[in-house]
Amino acid sequence: MEIPRDISTNPKYLLNGLRVFGIDSPDLKILKSSHRLKILRYLFIDELPEELVELDDPKFYFYKCRGNFIQTVMGTFWALLRYQLITDRALKIKIKDFYQFVRSLDFTKKLDKSVIEVVNQIQDDVIAHLGPKILSFNDSENL
Image (cartoon, rainbow, N blue to C red; front, top):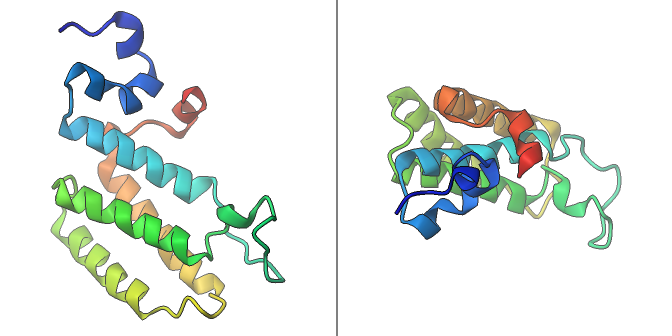
C-alpha cells in the first residue's frame, strides 16, 4: 500500500500513524522514543518546588522530581534497549548503572537537585547517541 504524500511528510503521522499502513521499523521506534525523551528532557520542570505540590496544581505532573517522571525516563531507556536501538556498549552500561541508581532512591522523601542533574545528563547522552535519526526539537511544534 502506498502512503499518501501528506501523511508521509507530516511528523504527526510519522510518529503516530504509520502503523496503520503496516510500517513499523526501527527508525519509527527511534523517532517515537527520542521525541518522548526530548519532551521529558526539555518541557518538564528542573526546579524543585519549595512546598509540597498538590494534585490540583497545574504544574504537578511536570516536575522532574516526581518518581513517576524518573520511572517514565527509565521505561523509555528500556524500550530503546529492548529494540536494540542503543548500540554503544558504554551507554548501555551507563543506563544499567542509572537503573541501579533509580532503584536506590527513596521516593517517599524529597529528591534533591543532584538527582535531576543525573537524570538530565543521561537523557542528554541517549539523545546524542540517537543523533541524526531524531526529530529536531522544533519539529515537535507540528505534532
